[in-house]
Amino acid sequence: MRLALPAAGLLCLAATSAQAAPACTVEALKALTVPDLAVTEATPKPAANGIPAYCDVQGTVVTKGANQPNGLARFAMQLPEHWEGRFLFLGVGGNAGNLNPSANPVDRAQALGKGYATILTDTGHVGDGTTAKWTRLPDGKADNVKMVDFFHRAAHNVTVAGKAFASAYYSGKITHAYFDGCSTGGRMALMEAERYPEDYDGVISGDPMMSFNTYTARAVVQKAALSSPKAYISPGLLAEIDTRVRATCDAIDGAKDGLVQNPTACPIKAPDLLCKPGETAACLNPEQMQVVKTYTSPFHDRHGKTVFGPWAITDLAGAQGVAYNVTGQAQPDLSTLSNPWKADASKAPRSWALVQEMLTGYLGLGANADVTQLDIDPRTNTVSDKMLAMMHATYAEGEARDPARLKRFIAEGRKLIIYHGASDPSIPASQSIAFYRELSQLHGKATPASARLFLVPGMHHCGGGPGPDQFDTLSALEAWVEHGKAPAAIVANTKPDAAAPHHLKLCPYPQQGRYDGKGDVMDAASWGCVAG
Image (cartoon, rainbow, N blue to C red; front, side, top):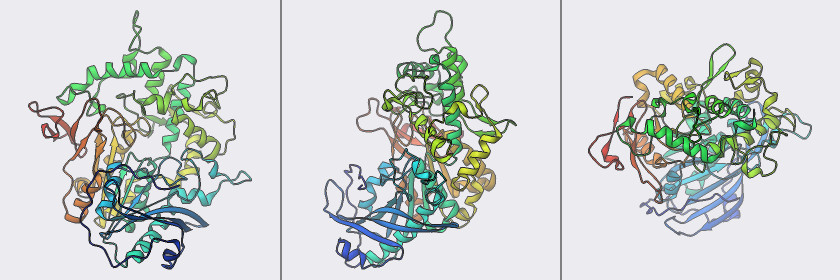
């Protein structure tokens, strides 16, 4: 599978090449003899559609270390004809297993034109991004080699080998190295910063899956959603609820522009959406209300400690909104809870599919496992000690949730940009907010000198939603690392074909965007960043 390049109308920047690179053939590249790296494909790509000429390479890297036997990870690499000494690793999404990048598309579109050698890996197994069958050996036992490769080992080993390969190919030294990923790619970025800080000068972590208790929280919501036929919330009703929420919360930021800048400031709670006598539209029955309440409330252990944050009540509708991620695009058949959308799997929510893979793959609970078997309670949003212990035993090595582990990364002057869709229905922004708050408690006022969080109003998971999901984090990171200019704000735009174009400033948390009350509300110049 070849690395998919997004359309790019960007001009190629002037670049300074190292000495003449080898021919873009398997035979020529094999002669570079980088340890543990094997080239299997090499294809020269001519310049086209604003993308410069490059050598498209695929191969494998032997993975080693972490107290596990060796594994093998595939990689895809793009080596531009004109190189500026830069190296960019792109993360992948979901349960990985393929060579499809999950990273900021604006950053990806401009990387080759900026003279970056880019690379990504399947993290040591083959899959479609959803399946977790690869986590089990033929005898049913956990495949610890593939698990540790997925958690962190493959990205690090491919980084080391990829850097060596780029340096050998160009006969030059890498001057700056960056990591750019979203979702699982965002977790990969944090894992690199926490475990292998020497690998990258700066990392971009978008909508990061930093805690695998994301699955635990998803399971609680799925249990609520599958509790009764009356609990199903249709895409149409979600759109009606959005209209009702915006009517109350849109103008809190000073502008009625169709976006809620800060969903946590929205006073509407799930019980407010219950149908009153005589109401039939834009309201919820008790079972539906419970699903929304579960979704928008924190999750706790049986001792009252918060183990995971809530999702936002804003921007529930949309192509990749709550129906796509949580409730499904068709009503489930509750007669078979291990496969409620067996009539049309395309209508099943992604959250349900990922939770099912967690149960059958990672946790090894069997093909007929379903969320109703778990000791979790959606009415109180509590998770049992047994469930949490099982999750910890399975996922501990892949967690990127502890900001204390960034100590060396920060001490060495490296930089971190986190961004998160404020209305992300897959991984809630509350997780990134909690992480950044804890990081700030550890480092105080020095935190913004090393790490900044940007919340994207109206954006869903890594893009989509009614908000401005087009923004350049790579240039912001370059300016910070290479010139000491920290990002005071990042300008974000909606896609060119958006029904309601927006041009806004993304503000570094805890600052929030605020309309100045005078200019065009759709113009970034009319927005400032104020204390949150």
